[in-house]
Length: 160
Image (cartoon, rainbow, N blue to C red; front, top):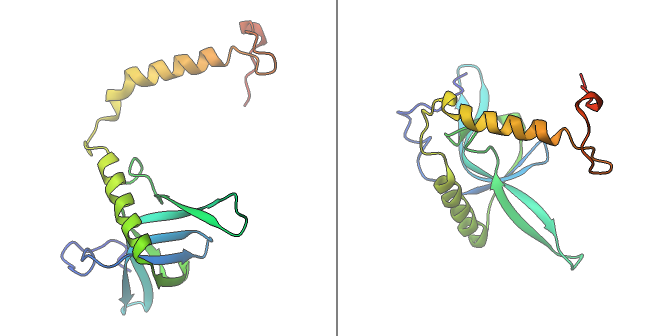
């Protein structure tokens, strides 16, 4: 089975209308969706492009709720926001309202502007920041969370 979009397959990256997708994990996504039938091994799978997860937020009125949108997988983890899903992973697909479509495109635009620009960043460039973070963590471990008093080095506990 081909699990990566073929760059020459123009249907994979062709703009489509956003769809509501409920996964078998219970997650609700809005994304652009391409269905692929692999006739060779009789497999159905999907490419999802720019998946945005819907998060349902309670409101003061118990009969209503709000909807927040967040990236399904952060661009700090995966720069390319195209994923392959096995056909069995999807419970249902439906069209979304015009309002959700507008909010989806705003969310995608927002996250694309936040994306790290240097995809070839050298992880060793962050050594100084990492060292500072480790020092701060060590300093925090010297504080007893129960009473806020500093602990002596002899009272520090190592948890394995």
